[in-house]
Amino acid sequence: MIYTVTFNPSLDYVIQVDKLVPGEINRTTHEAVYPGGKGNNVSVILSNLGHSSKVLGFTAGFTGEALENMLKEFGCDTAFIRLPEGSTRINVKINAGEETEINGQGPVITEEAQSALFEQLDALKEEDILVLAGSIPNTLPSDIYERILEHLQGRGIHFVVDATKDLLLKVLKYHPFLIKPNNHELGEMFGVTLKTRDEIVAYAKKLQEMGAENVLVSMAGDGAILLTEDGIIYKAKPPKGKVLNSVGAGDSMVAGFLTGYLNTGEYEKAFRLGVVTGSATAFQYWLATKEDIVALMEDKPETYGL
Image (cartoon, rainbow, N blue to C red; front, side, top):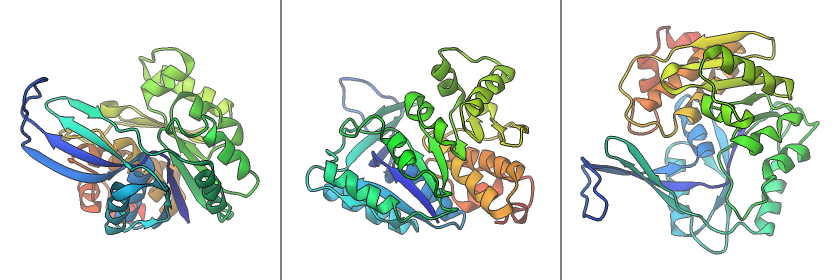
C-alpha cells in the first residue's frame, strides 16, 4: 500500500486573467477549483495511473469536506483526521502570463490530532511506501518529518520525501528510498548556485553520502537527473510542449517514478515515466490524466506496465 501525507492540504482556486493590475478590478478568463497539497497531488496521479493510495493528513470545516469529496471523485482513499476548529485553507493560483500564488494559513493542528496521525502510521507494514511531501504549518513541530521516520524505523517501510532544506536534510540519516529536490532546492541546501549538470550530480551525491538511497533532481525545462543506489546516473530532457502550469509537476514526477518502479522494478523505466508524467502535468492546466501521459510517451505504455 502507498500512503501519502499532506500536512497543509488546500483547495486550490486556479484562475487565469489576461493581465493582473493591482488596485483594480480584475476579471477572470478561466477558473477552476482543485484539491491541493503535494501529497494529494501524488495520490491523484497514482490513481490516474492505476495505483491506489491512502491519503492522510488533516482537514477542517466545509473546505475540508469539499477537499475530501473531490479526492474521492479522483479515486483516492481518504483517511483525513478532522480538526474541531478552523477551515482547510484556500490557495489562490493566478496565471496572468506569469504565476502568482496567495496561500492560506490553514487550521491549528492539535497535539491530539498529531497523536491520531501516529496511530494511523502504526498500521504501515513492511514494503509499504510512505510519501511525505510539502511544507508544514507553523502549528506543527518543525521536526515532524524526522519524528515520523524515527518512529517507523526498522519496519521495512520505503520512505519518499519531497521537501526543502532542513525538512529534507534531517531525515537523510533514516535512509529514505527516494528524495526529490529540484536543482534550486539542492543548491540552497548547501548554500551554492548550481549552474551545470556536473555540479548538480556532485551535490546530489552528497545527499546520497548523507543517507539517501535514490536522489531524483527535477530541473523544470532542463529535464531531470536520477542517481540510483546502484551508483548509476540517468539524465533526461523533457518532452516538447507548451508549459501551462508548473504547480504539481514535481509531485507528478514522484508519482510517475513510483508507478514505473512498482510496475517494472527498474529504475531507468521509473525515471523515464517520472519525467514524462511531470511534463504531462506541466502541459495541462492541472494534473495530467493517463491519456495526457501516454500521449507524450516515445515507448508503448506496456513498456511501463500501464
